[in-house]
Length: 139
View 1 (cartoon, rainbow, N blue to C red):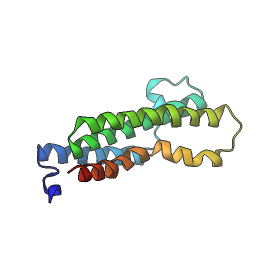
View 2 (view 1 turned 90 degrees about the horizontal axis):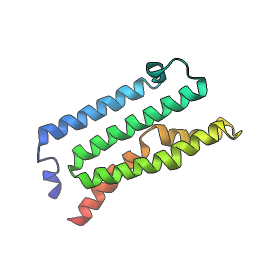
View 3 (view 1 turned 180 degrees about the vertical axis):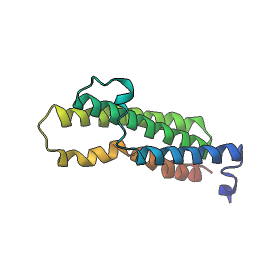
View 4 (view 1 turned 90 degrees about the vertical axis):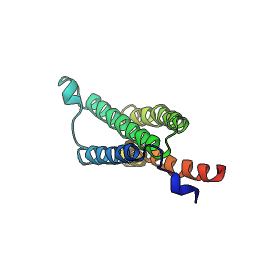
């Protein structure tokens, strides 16, 4: 049973980080309608506020998932890979999503699936079982 030692090194710290990231993700989800742009400037128009708020929420969600990945697997190489996935999501999902939403005349219902993929930390969440399976196969 190799899984028995998964959380052994620095176990209390790792469990605390997992709980902290889960609680923070829950707070972000509950406060999903919070206007982060109001903390920066009140002079932004509605499109600028939308872009700013979604970008902040994307970064918060993904970075909290990186913290969780680090706490679960305790290996920096997985955090580096997760960061690469975050950059991919930022440049190839988030930015095109904004372009589709504001620059092209596309109905919002067509891009709602992209919206869910971006705003919820779906890609990062999928990394956890993928990394776990890879670690099991490596052992």
